[in-house]
Structure formats: C-alpha cells, structure tokens
Length: 196
Ligand SMILES: [Zn+2]
Image 1 (cartoon, helix red, strand yellow):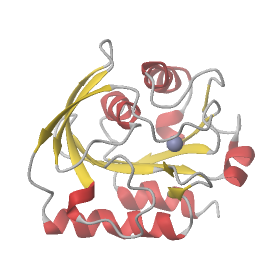
Image 2: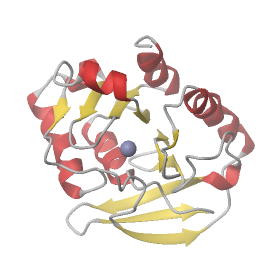
Image 3: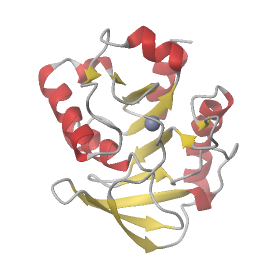
Image 4: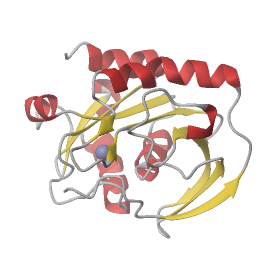
C-alpha cells in the first residue's frame, strides 16, 4: 500500500481563513512532537503520512491539510476545517486554506461514533504496527486507507470491540498505520508516547 497521501474522496473545498493563533499553538504542540518522532513525516518516495485533528463543535473538526507530512512545523495555512461529510457519496466538505487530509473520512466517523473523542492522531510506525497488530482493535487487512470501507471499519470496531476504552487501533491494510484518540490531544498523544 504505497499510495499513502492520495485523496480518494470527493472533496468540496471552500477556501476560507486560516485557524486562530491560539488553536495553532495548541495543535502544533503535538504535531511537532509527532513529526520529531517520525510518527508523521514523509516516506522514501517523498509522500507524506500521518495526520491529526481536533473536534470543534458537533461533528466538525480541524485537521492537518493534505501533503503536509514533509513540513516540520506547520503554520495556520496547513490546517483546515471539515464541516460535513457523506459516507455514502464518499464526499467531504472542507473550509480553509488547504485541502483536508486524505484520511479525513476516517477521522469523521470516529468523532461520530464516540462523542467523548475530541482529538485523533494517525501515525505510521513499523515497529508499533507489528507489535500492536491484533493485540488492540485491528481493521480488516483487505481494507485500504482513505476509503468509505475504512470508515465503516471504524464503526465495526466501535461496535464489536472495546475500542472506546482502548483508544488505539491498528489499520492492518494500511502499512504502519495506527490511530489513537482521546478526550483531548494530550490523551491521544500520550497513548502513543507510552508505547515508545
Ligand atoms: Zn496513513
């Protein structure tokens, strides 16, 4: 699965103002930390991986923009707001200065499934991926990243496993892909740090 970073949903992009400075500082604390660890970054083919988001109100959220993996410290131009989505139509509407991450639909469904979740971090790490595979809730290996099928896998895991308690999952069909979440970015991020 080498095509990480390619957007597979129909993105309605409404160009809008960047996020506020306060929000940027809060997001970048964890974004920069994740980037330093190599959890978010670029692969050998210069394709970006990893992303993170925080919930605003309802099911709207701020997420890192598409193709920002290579950037060490993001600016307010690198985040965008997802205002709604339609899983059946595989479409999503983003408002901001940049296109939303290719994995935005997966984030959207996690927020929908668990109202206590306010922050999500998606990282790539080979060692942790192998270590956690089938030890924590794990998606079907035939399901690719960024697809409605992956979003449906989130629903399945919330229904069939104790994902809302464990707050971490492995994407078996998405090489190195892991998602953690929590009531805030500290909880989502510390889940990952304690594994290192
Ligand atoms: Zn990924």
